[in-house]
Image (cartoon, rainbow, N blue to C red; front, side):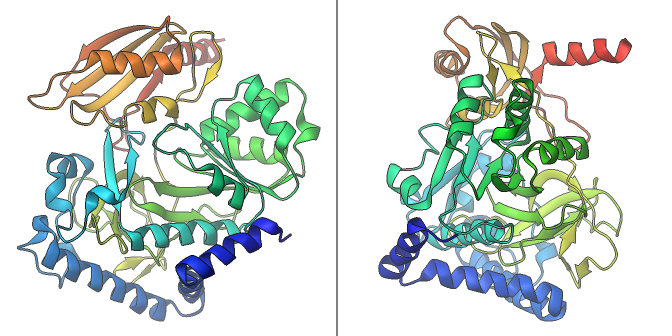
Length: 444
């Protein structure tokens, strides 16, 4: 149902931005509609966007100065570590990068990293989010709960939360946080969350028999950032009595693909904004239909810090018919990392993504990290230092104790490498208490 926030939001867009957001939303909706009605025409429009961004990067971006824009496959596949080694080479010198919004991430790899978003990228990203929400039953102005590890770098302004009816929900499923959520929940709400966050809340709600206070009040739950198992989806679906969709996205690119049907494992690629390739595991040749390969994306909108053929660190596949010429329109389930749950020094649930955001801004002295929890008050931080840097243990101590508690004991271990999962990712959180419990249960 449309409410005051709905009309205020669109009035602001019309008066201050000449309706730019509404126009971008309509353009993206037309592109997504074409994917079903006329795939070849959809491909041509997407290809035009690709050619435009490749032409720009070859003219403006130092790293690509000797690259021809004619063939995407001639561009090198890049990684976080490559960009981090020389941020300047991947930035547009004609634009003031320092004044642009930077999206930080450690993702599930434990690699501190950021990407600067240009105004056109911000607009496209905002439109993609709203298109995805609206296709899942959301009307702008409905209450939107965002379960996240909030900090000074990602907190939204009070004006924005008021205008959009946006709720910054703490991702840790403590009883206090659950009570605040249940008390504020209204009809026609939608939830965006990590899998670990919504599972923590769901288990607390079930344990305290609060199911009747949440059922039927949520239109849809969208999970991202972690792998969603069918068991977890079923559990969440039964508790909230609403559809549960998985979204494939990251901070550096935005929405890459979204699930549009709970009965299907397919993800629809966000073709208005992304070009997706699936490459073989051990080389940069295209994978065959049905073959598990690396997800490599090209961002079609970011002219400040273009991301071209970026290896996301995830694995997926596509089926026959899902690829139109050289562009993949649909991909199958994403093979990523499921993050271990952790607790603070009081043994209260603590969402592991608070550790992720704590390491934003440490990329000048930490290349990769992994935090291992041995007990509520004892952790080990394994880290790979940046070459020729001095490890700032005082800063890390302060960050971690602010999250876990001042009585936390931290052991530091400098290492040369951190083992990878089959997906090519590093689990940045390992809870030995949790894993020991699982082993014991399996041995019963």
